[in-house]
Structures are given as C-alpha cells and as structure tokens.
Length: 447
Image (cartoon, rainbow, N blue to C red; front, side):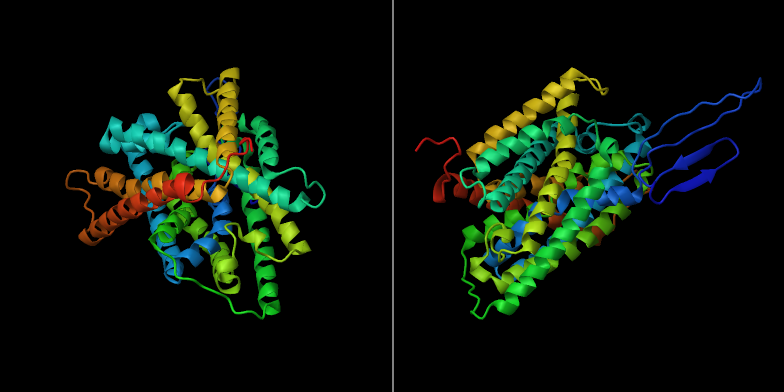
C-alpha cells in the first residue's frame, strides 16, 4: 500500500494503509490466546483530499473560461472569492458533523445521509427534507453534466472516423456501461477512483495549458471581448458556482474517514489544489481566445496530440467523478426506501433506475452548459454557500461555553444573503436560457 503506516499499543496492533483499508485487532483473554480480526475501512486525510479534489475539478474547469468571458474581468475576482467562500463553507460543514457526532453518539457509526442529519439537528425535519431534495437534484444534475461532457469529448475524438455517431448516442452507451460500477456501496469500496479522478485531471489540465500557450504564440489576431448583459452575467454566475459545488458530497466523504476531525484540513488542501488547476486554464482561455472560446474550452483549442491525450484523460476523470458524485444520492434514495446496506438486488434496481432517468434527462437537454448553470445557480448555491454557515450558527452555540465572534457571524450572513440573491438571479437566467432564448432540440426530436 502507498504511504503505509504501522502503529501498536499494549492491547492490539493495527495496520493502516493510506486509504485506511484495514485494521487488525488482537485481544487476549485470561483463559488463553484469542485473536479477533476485524476489518475497518475508512479514508485517510490524503485519500479524502483526493476524493474532494477529484469530484470537483473537471467539468468546472472546462466551462470556466466561457463564464469568465461572459462576466468580464470581474469574473476572475469572483473565481477567487467563490473559491475562498466555498472552502470556508466546506470547513464549517465539517465542523457541523463533528458537533453532531459529539452530541449524538448514535451517529458515530456509518451513516448514509450525513448532510440531511446535520440539517435535522440544526433546523428540524423540514430542513432535513429540503437538503435531501437539493442533494438529489444537485448530484443528479452534476452526473448528467459529466456524462454529457464525456460523450461530447468522445465524439470530438472519433468524429473523423465515425462521423455518423453523434454525442447523443455516446451518452447512452457511456451511461449503460457505468451501471455495474454504480452498484458498489460507497467510495470506500472503490478508493482508487479518487486517484484516477484527480491524477487524470491534473495531467489533462497541464496538457490543455500547454496547448493554450502554443495557440497564444501562433495567434497574431486581436482578441475580442464584448460587453455582456445581466443575463449572460448571471448565467455564468451559475457556472462559477458549479465549479465549486462539491459540498453535497462532503459529509459523505467525511463520514467515510478514519479520523473525521481531519476533514477541514482535507477541504483546505483540496481547494488549493483545485485553484492551481483552474487559474491557468481560465485566465489563458480568457486572454487567448476571448469571445471565440467555447462553453467547453477543449473545442476551442487547436487540434493536436496534446489535446487528444487531454481529452482522453478528461473522459477518464468524468467517469470516475461520476461514480463519486452519484454515490451520495444513491445512498440517500436507498435510505428513503429503507433498502438494506448490504449488497442486494434492490440496491441494483434503484441505482439502475437512476441511470435510466438520467439518460432521459440528458437526451432531453443535450447541452451540458445549460444543465450546469441551472444546477450551479440553484441547489449548489444552497448546499455550498447558504446551508453550511446557517447550520453552523445553529449548531455551534452550546449554552455559554461556545460563542461565535461577531465578525464571523457578519461574514456568514453575507455569504447567505449573497448566495440567495445571486442564486435566484442565476437560476432564473438558466431556466430562461433552456426554455426560451436558445431552445435546444432533444436528441429524440423528430425533424
């Protein structure tokens, strides 16, 4: 195992891998030697960081350059601000779960829907139900975006060989192929997915950045930047929010950690890594291509081996990230239907049904940017920027022993207000774009 650590005490020896895959406990009875071997699965700080970064970095980085072009230079500032605010919200969400475990020992065991439980303890049953529905919508939408992007990239790679097969067909094929891996229980059972998701993204982003630099040296034209209205601004606002919309899976990842109190550290490291990936491509796309940049920046890059390799790696990332983001919503739905946690046919049926529904949505709205903006401006805003500080302010005070400083309360209320106002405007713009301004025909539309 990578980074394997070994620790012992007087009662037992534990062997813990970097992914926290196994612990072996030995107990001696008074009558003789008795050994009990117990396998304990869990994520380490490092592996949790990989899951967080791998789940977020991907579709966001591909769509950000177009979003920054639509918002102008202020978009670069918003990118940095949203990163800080999203990381702050993730840290507070981690503290919320630690408080819940501290006060309610029954939740220290494996839990399917930790975010909903945080809401339940903070604001009651209505809040818990609202969070569950938001998570389902967010992750379902994010998963659809990932598959739409992957199918678009596959078409870009194979278009000259198989011109008759479009992205709609690839979308169905990818969705069907991914059903079997979805039957696995949780990220603990496919820990290498975290490695695959983040490493493929890092290499792909490096390749795309190199190609942007090559295009910048070749281009002699003046880059054009138009002034965009409020509609484009708030539509891109949702895209920026989507790029940092991993909070819906954070409590599930934290709940799978060996040491849950290390989760805030994992969030901080993950966001630093993500910004190192986001900034070069975003700024490069803005200044090198300007108004000509596509909603998927890879389609704006000059055709080359670097771009093809980057697309292949990004497809791998999108498939792995899909498995990560869809797992919490699957577990939440299974909890609602009271399906046993062990592997069984009911789990397979529920998860297969979710994929089939996703195929219907993806075939109905085949442009990933529209789904991305809608999800980013609505439920991601709530789960990432509104709920974490609100729940933290509800849970943290405990009689007179705990007190949140005034400046921190002001900051959290600013996050909540800006999130609600900006999210509402972004959601309206996204809905307007889907159904009125630039209606896109479904894949099954008969001409």
